[in-house]
Image (cartoon, rainbow, N blue to C red):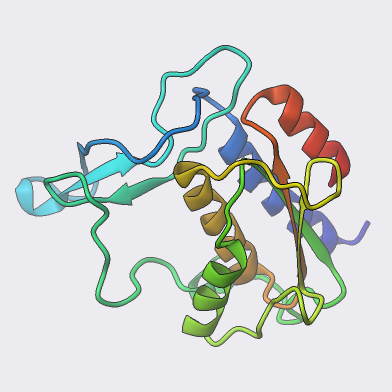
Length: 199
């Protein structure tokens, strides 16, 4: 396996590990804010309200997504007027990624539940940063259930945010890769394992 393929596989594995490790949870929606502080500065100016998109604790034998979203004091997601955070160019520079963009490679993402807006959310991210379109129609994006079919599990708002984040980050680090999203029926490890086998 080439270094490039091992790097992409490693990055995909880290995304999957982040999505499937730690405190497990049952599906739900975004809940109230908790204050988290910055380790860089002090004082109220360096603090923001955040909410976990998949709050715990959870039942034994299940996984928890670890994404957080910035919220207002009422606990509602707080949209930014313009993109913030690391751009695809920032990530490529930070990890010294090859300029080939991963053409001919496939990255599989395994997450729990369904994100019914996965493809359209992906299109917004890729358009925002000038990345080539990645759609079902051009063969770049594919979505299957844990059995390889199209009987998708029920939607879950928290896991949908995790799925969108994972799709965006694969797009950022491998803009020319094809993406396969495999949606597990639930966040139970048994379903996630079946989805991993399918991937």
